[in-house]
Amino acid sequence: MKKIFLSFAAASALLASCSERPAVTCSPVDSLTKVFPENTLFRNAPDTLDAAGGTHVEFQFALHGAAQVEGFTVTCSDLVSEDGSRIPAPRCGVVGYVGVGDLADYPAHDVLRSSTGLFPDPILEQEEYEFEPFVTFCPWITVFVPEGTPEGIYTAQVRMKGRSAGRRFSFVKPINVKVWPVTMRKPDFPNVNWAFDFEGCMKQWNGGKSVERYSEDHKKYLEDLYGILAEGHQTMTRMPIWGVVDMKKTAEGGWEFDFSRFDWYVDICRKAGILDIIQIEELGHRLVPVWTGQMGLFVPVEVDGKMEKESYAPTDPRVREFYSYFIPSLRKHLEEKGLTDRCYQQVCDEPVDENAVSYCQAVSLIKEFWPDVKVLEALQTTRTTGATDAWCPQLNYWHENYEFFKERQSKGDEVWFYTCCYPRAQYPNRFIEQPLLKTRMLFWMAQKYNADGYLHWGFNYWNEDPFAETAIPGTGTLLPGGDAWIIYPGDRKMLRSIRFEQHRDGLEDLTLLKMLAEKNPAQAEYLVNTLISNWWVYNGNPDTYRQTRRELLKSLSEINE
Image (cartoon, rainbow, N blue to C red):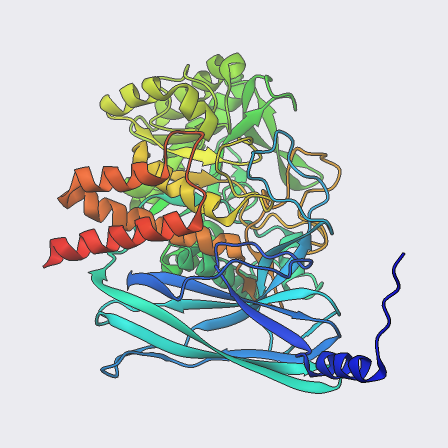
């Protein structure tokens, strides 16, 4: 083998050049790209992002150091146009990494894999950050363009600085936003994420300390939770019943109900602005924990001096006796609060063909006491006609039975759709291992197939360590990483995730598409079809997406001329 010898002068020059290399490198990266801790090379990011008034855009930078990084900070100035108009300084954070132990089976062709098992997701918001050597980390900049912002190109400087290998480093990078002469109206597409205030969830938010129910801390938790729901353009909430409404047997053998704590939730939701629609918590479930098990309805029973709930078949006399009191009382209370017209009732979650008859029996009993109640149900059956008013099939089931659901819409029913631990394969969903653009495509698909709303069960169903493991331990591949939550607990605050931002931005895209469809339906359809070929195939190229969205804003601006 040929030996290569390096002269002393050449070796000295090489060492000198190495010592002159920056301790940390910084690269702009498209915010639709998930950056893993082991990544070091990136495609060029767009120089300028397009926006309408009332919408958000995000920027991302990837920094990589060969030594420990300490005292890292990221800040950004106001964005300013040539004529001096301003967009307020954006929110700045750093994308954190979380564990995904159990990946979904039936992966799509575009599934993302990490050699470390770590995936980017939460947006951390701290005064300073520290990072291990050889770990790539990403500052994340979220710009909100206020309504009425004059058109033009707005520029700001992102300042990133810290210490590494005994030296200080700093970067100043520009970000540019082109604001079109378009203002997005308030998003009104019905969209509900089930949000939870279980003891464990509140404990995570409260630094590991328990939170007393209905205390000021509980109220603060809900204000934070409902506030971030509102930030994500959620216009409705799922309202709890069991354990919230006080239920007591009377001396005469009837029932009486106290809705004070129910109203407590309602008032917090109203202040947060997420009370356009109410979905009342389910009244029953399967009698046995088997997917095809028959449906039953809950009835309160006293156990050791406390009211618990047990399930009984809809035909059981105890069910009729209880609901003959409860449903009229609930209806009357909602009428007094002016909420009846905006109310949907959930009866038994996710009925399937095998238990559709018992499900319809349960709904029939409820409607006997409240004939005009609207029933909204996540389901996987077509056998509940007459019982279900707002059908909410799982995305793949909607696909497989699309003509049936189109017919139901033509008859006056609503058709929403939902995603959860399924569907998988090529379908868009919110799993952490999927590309970010796939989450946004849920709402372009909603426009293409004329959905009336969207539902997801898991907004903040955190486990004991939601950063270390995002797949629910012990369930195998049943609940993949990201299915059970899309936000994270901070120190008495809620932390956004990069998936949450894409979900919110997807709703903004949908609102803009609907605005265009009202004026130029052919152009709106053309743009949707540019990205969504069918239920299985969408264009996953961020460049193509950004070009299409730019054309959407251009089309809207031409209508406004």
